[in-house]
Amino acid sequence: MATGAPLAEVLRAAAAVWVRVRDGQSLDRALQDQALKHEVAAPIRAAVHAVSHDALRHCALIEALLPRLIARAPAPQVTGLLAAALSQLIVGAYRDHALVDQAVAAARSDRHLSAAAGFVNAVLRSFLRRRAVLVPQLLLDDATRLNVPRWWLQRVRREHPEHWERALACAVQPPALLLRVNRRRCDVDAYLARLRSEAVTARRVGPYAVRLDRPCPVQQIPGFTEGVVSVQDAGAQLAAPWLQADDGMRVLDACAAPGGKTGHLAELSDARIDAIELDPARAGLITDNLQRLGLAAPRIRILTADARDVASFWDGHPYQRMLVDAPCTASGIVRRHPDIPWLRREADVAQLTTLQAGLLDALWPLLAPAGRLLYVVCSVFREEADQQADSFLERHPDARLAPLPGTRHGWLQLLPTGADPVEPGQTVGLPTEHDGFFFALFEKV
Image (tube, rainbow, N blue to C red; front, top):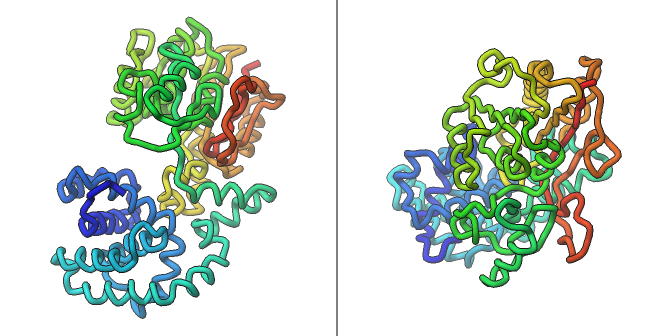
C-alpha cells in the first residue's frame, strides 16, 4: 500500500475497478481507463493497483463469502466496495476496525453509494464476527482456495496430475519483479554488483535473469531508463536464445508487442528483424522499448499487420528464423494478471487454439529450408501446447521437432514456479523462477 494514501479513496477507486473487471474488462485496461484516471489522484494509483490485485487474487473466496453475508446481491458498485474491503481484511493490510471505518467513509463520499453506508458497515462487521469459521470452511474447496473457476481447476488437474496443485498455488502468490540484463550494456554479475552498491538486494535466477527482492516502480529500477535492464519473466527470456538467430539472418517476430522478445533478439545478435503487431498502439510500445535499449536501428522493422495476412507485410524473401509468440489463454501468467481466470470461458481455449493453428499455417511457408520456427504460448493448457505442436506436425510433413538448446526434446512445458536462486559458480540452465510457458522448436526439412 502506498504510504499516506487516503484509504477511503483507494477503496472507492478499487471498487470501480472490480466492477469493470467483473463486467469483462481486463484489469490492466480498467486501471488505465481514462475515466477512472480522472477520478484517481496520482499518489494513490499504486495503492489502487495493489488493492485491486488483492481483490482478484481472492476473487473466489470473496464471491463465496458474499452470499453468506448478505441475503440479496446489492448494486454492482456496492459489491465492488465490499470486495475491495474484504480483500484487505483477508490479507490483514490494516487494523480491522480502521478498515471498516474507511470503507464506510468511502460509501458516504460517493453519491451512488451513500445510501448503502450502513449496509457496508453491517456486512463487514458480520464478516469480522464470523471470519474464523467462514474462511477455513470455504477454503476446503480447492477452486476457492486456489482462486480459479471450477472448469479451470478440473482442466489443470486432469492435464498435470502430478503438479497441478503446486502450479495453481504458485499462481495465487504475488509475483516477483524479474529483470533481463541487456548483455550489450552489462553482464549479470556486473549488474548484481551495481545493485549491491546501491543497497538493492537481488539474486540471479536465470542466464540473463535477476530477481529484485523488493519490487519497485520501473523508473526506480537501477539501469532501467538507460536500457541496462528490462522487465521480463525469466521463462519468457528463454525464447530469444533458443531461436539461435545469428548476425545477418532474417528473423520474423510475430505478435511482437510490447517488444520484450524483440528487444532480447536484438540484444543477442545483429539479425535483421521484422516485428509484426496488429494493434498500432501496441506496435508503438515496441518502438519505445527498442529506443530505451538503444536498439532502434534500420535492421529492425516494426510492421503493423495481421501476421496471418502475409501478403500485407511479406516481401517474398524467406526468413531463416521465426518467433511465433501466439495469442493464448495466458493461463501461465495468472500471478501477474489475476483477472485472467475470471475473464476466460472454457470455450475460449478451443477458439484460441484455432487462431494459433491459423498463425502457424500462414507463416510456415515463409520459412526458408533448414529454417527454424519457435512456437511460444504463456499457457499451461495442453490444447494450446503439446497437442497444438502434435497437430502442426501432422499437417506439415516438411516440419520436424528440433531439440531445444540444452535439452533433449523439441518442446518444453514450464509450469509456474518460484525456487532457489542460482548460486555463484553454478551452471545456469533453465531459470529457477518463472511463469508458465510452452515452447516448441520446428525445423523445416
